[in-house]
Image 1 (cartoon, helix red, strand yellow):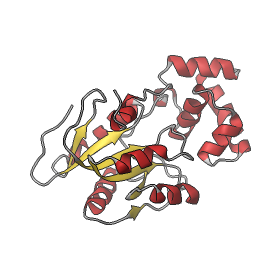
Image 2 (cartoon, one colour):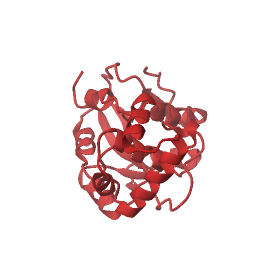
Image 3 (cartoon, helix red, strand yellow):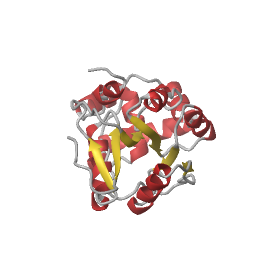
Image 4 (cartoon, helix red, strand yellow):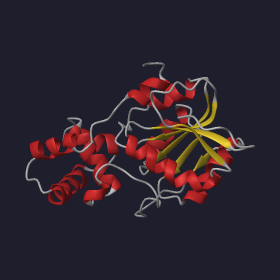
Length: 223
């Protein structure tokens, strides 16, 4: 779905492997449609025109491998690339910048601050949010498992587990300690009422925690 451009509004393409995440960000930005136009939501729609900003939501992506960011930054249809995440490990920020990201924004930003940050990036600034700390995600966001009481971080870890990642791999990809990952997993088990990893993976697969790579493949020039 491609929206018509309004006056001097900034066009933004939302890139993430999970539709519920993309729709949540779009809904949060909807009140600011006079300043931000969501140019692309449907991964099956080929966007022929350039967009001002590609907003890459890193939900449950292997954040230590920034190939996706590099691909987006090199795409001639993406004038600028911004990473949207909760993970503010210094190595991740450094890597994203080296791969060509023009911004690194926190999911804890209120919608008005997110819009202001995107406008600053569009104007040519490099914008890196303050680390979110323990702040909760911005109002209006959504993610798989939210309805079951999972936090965004718990959902990301469950999504990685559902992709077959081990605890050590999850820890490395999220820059969390192994003990922290284990603590998250125990909490996840309790919230989704399972007692084993196999049951958790099955629950995740049946509940939309496996990624659909079409949207990122689309920006790579794939189907």
